[in-house]
Image 1: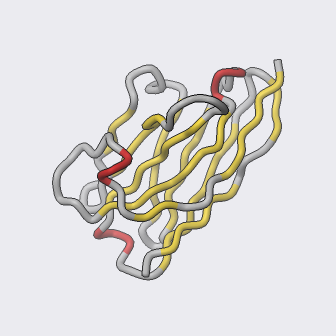
Image 2: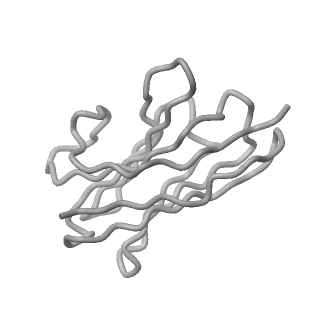
Length: 125
């Protein structure tokens, strides 16, 4: 069974940077596409970025491209989300998710079968 464990969430000031990590276990990591989603209080969960397993091709929510960068280390079974110039509206619980679908890109939460418990990012103004 696939397990995902996020880490790296923190409280930081506006303009700061943070790198989130998500460790994957239970299956062959490189066969899974990975995604980062976030959910702020009172809002729907939204797609942030995704990275394909076989090619490491990436896809971003357009409003986040440029400030956020997703990457993966298949040797370490880990996916990362580098976040720069964080703003108060970026505050949310960030989740990583895994999918063995072969289609790409995967923007919907329903396309991902496995989810982590989330890590909280708080941005003070």
